[in-house]
Image (cartoon, rainbow over all chains, first blue to last red; front, side):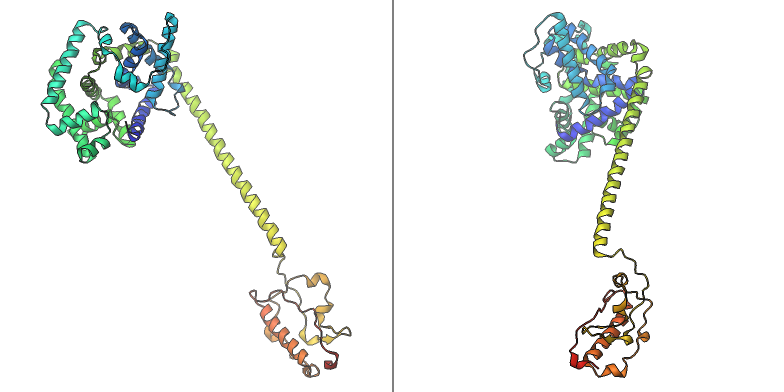
Length: 197
Length: 226
């Protein structure tokens, strides 16, 4: 992730945090939606039991909500949230009387090496089935996308590249990248709509 | 909801909007349930592409978090108890920024004071601070040789305190200089001195040239005395 992207991400998160502090609870819901996957993945590296990992992640988000007053914006919101999640997970292990992992886990490592299969156990059979169906549908929809849209959405969602980096890679203006990613999402969304409804 | 609007939402989800647009879109997202729903779809598509765990695709997690937050005691809610804490923090920040302004002003004043003091001391060394008050100037026609071979006019008879003062310009006009008396005209030195004093008197009237030149006296050979 480029530095520029981090800066803009921070400004977006800061906007949402400002709204939370102003009493707009919905803003925190958006933050949860944005980071839940990363936090659950991270916590699951410490807490092996999938159900407990979910509870610890939930606790971390609630702690973050309560502790927003201490968040000064010196670091990115996710970095701050990451520390809370790690501490919550460690405290959970201490409370459980278990040994903590020897070394701290890097955020990226946690994202790359998390064992998703364990987390799958936490879902109900219905939601598991729906999730698998969603994944298959999205995968199929991407395959049918025009090449330029497929590359743009893949570089964004899988590689996490900024629009600027994608524009450079695809040799086109940033506005075109923005439009391609949007059209790709819309095309996938149309295919996905019957499932979600 | 137009395409360009939705496109901005897509860019907002990727944190790719500028500061102003981000603020505006944040407002819109918080106001519109439809936009929030579309945003969740975008997040869902992203999670599916990244093959994230099934739980990440299950929106019930964020619902549970928000339910727990809603169940918090009132003093732990941002829209109630915590808001006061935030404003208190803001007030203390405002206080700090006010102190910074005050400290900056104090530093600037100190620098100005030091500069002024230094300038004043430099001027006093060069004597510039003395006022150019009108002073009587020697009458060039009244020049007489003294026994100690010193020629002086009334300038020489002026008290030392007056001599230290700068010559005043406005009181002297070129036409006020009288011609050298015939008794003096025989002496070459006297003529030279007379001419010099006349020129000096003329230019001393201007502030740009010889403003403080004074003739205290000069030596002449005895045989040239009239």
